[in-house]
Amino acid sequence: MDNRFIDWKRSARHRKLLAKEFRQERNNHIVFGLDTGHLMLEPVDRAPRLDHAIRAALTLAWVSLRWGDVAGGCGFDAAFRGYVEPGRGMRYFNQLQRFFSGLDYHTEETNFTLGLTELSSRLKRRTLVVLFTDFVDSVSADLLLESLNLMARRHLVVFVTMRDPLLAGKVAAWPGDFVQAAEAVISDDILRDRRVVLERIGRAGVQVLETTAGNVTPDLVNRYLLIKQRGLL
Image (cartoon, rainbow, N blue to C red; front, side):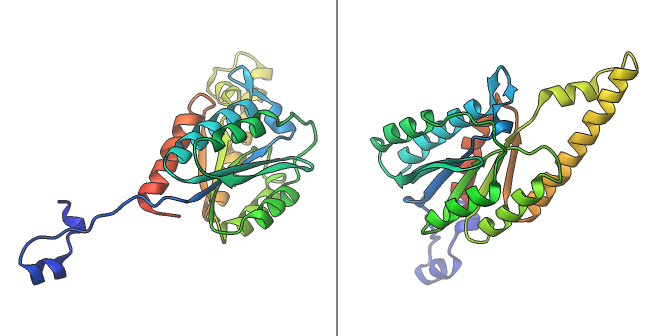
């Protein structure tokens, strides 16, 4: 027995050690929000960010459906591009697969206010919202942060973003000339602004998952399992 789960009052009453037994709650609602705007077209590890996001979303959808949860999704950028109602059962995975594979690339700038407000209006109960998106700087992230603040009041939000190895490489590289030195300084400024925005998002009650494109799928599944273990939904 784990002594943290021992029920001391009942143990004293029955004169033997009794422990509480916990079971993972099922039927939790999970909705994946995929940003299909121009920033998600940027290639990372030889593939657009959106492709990595779709792969991670489908993997977690499969895992969550196997666990007995309910999964759905949406896509948005300058407009709301579609929504699939959360459903249960492994047969529903095929419908999610068709929906995510049908999301197109768009070059418009993402309207977070429109997309997240529309998504919130469709969620009828507390939901784990897994949002795949990105931002350029602290100015463009203000509207994103405002929308996340509103959504986090009712739902558990995981903000998933992928690091750009190019920026980190320029900062770490030894500058051979003035141009390379300028690139390193600018890259460092961008990364610093990015850390500030992610800290602000975390303080708003949103779980931040910043990872590499190659690790986004296992890191996201591990975060989901941790959420289930802690009973945050």
